Image (cartoon, rainbow, N blue to C red):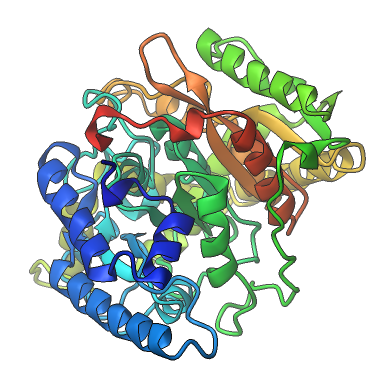
Length: 493
């Protein structure tokens, strides 16, 4: 008999409402799985079992009262367990950002997305592992250890939301929050064979998210399918006056339909995303998925995003520059532990020098250099101009097509340690995801096959600004016609 951990989000919510299962039973099932698998996977930094069971008990009381007198609307996610990436504030639970400099930081408030999910009734299982300050593509940069890919423990889960992706893939949680600054939801979703949404910049409040690159950071969700992710997105998306970049726009309803819903959809395929160095298994799986869309009635159109090749250098000027400014506050005075020194500058030097990891220090130095006097115009200023060209590429493309389909990453999940001594090779893993962040468009990644070694392959759909509804509908149509998203690794059994 299938275990409770195998229920989809909609199945779990329906059984909770009908009284067939309790939130405490469901939560306990996930906590048992975490206890059994966490030593090998290391998907979490902080677990909150007592808090989770208390929240589940409260949810069960509300559910029981509603069943006795079913009047009014129940909170839409009441009793559903979830995990939260450890860069988002949850009041009373430490928020480390994968860094030793925040190992003792306990926020007194909730991030807006967390607050909205709590109001919708979720049960928090814990905080998931992440590359330090979300800077990485493998979750190897965490100060709290490496997360392993559930499909092969010798491989990375992707990053920086690798803990969230691994947790969902291994059925340690039905869904988890992630963040995407340069691909950090979509790439781990692809590597771990789950579905991951990168939201439009401005669609979701960043209040309570510890900032990495403020003009690039977005909050998204990882789940097993588009149908599982959609109701969670609908809860946490929307305007927030606490975030100056939050857009006050209506949220379109998400109408998930069958395969026929993509008939007539104009699907653009950018030539710049099928390049030398693309793993053949990845290209074959993505092209086969595009063929499935064609068989369902979508119109496939070749397109060009001509400035794609500049995305990596542009990103690695803009993001580190913003990180340099954002991380200046972590100095051993205002947050976390403080190392001793004779003078104030000695405290800064000792604390930041020893508590920041190598990748964070590398990006701070890159960003500080790009912003320094005499170099700002030549580097940061020029990068912003090219960013505008990348954004215009997408705007022009969306005049011809409705959705863009492309690989998520040039390879499947690489081995742990494979890129440790080659930062450039690691940065190139994001070559297909960075343009979407620079342009601010939404993207949805989901599984479309496996490579010859049994590792998942993902595709990403990108849409016009604020059209997450279109991406959900297109992804759901594909998942109604295929079963890749239903496959699970051995650790999910």
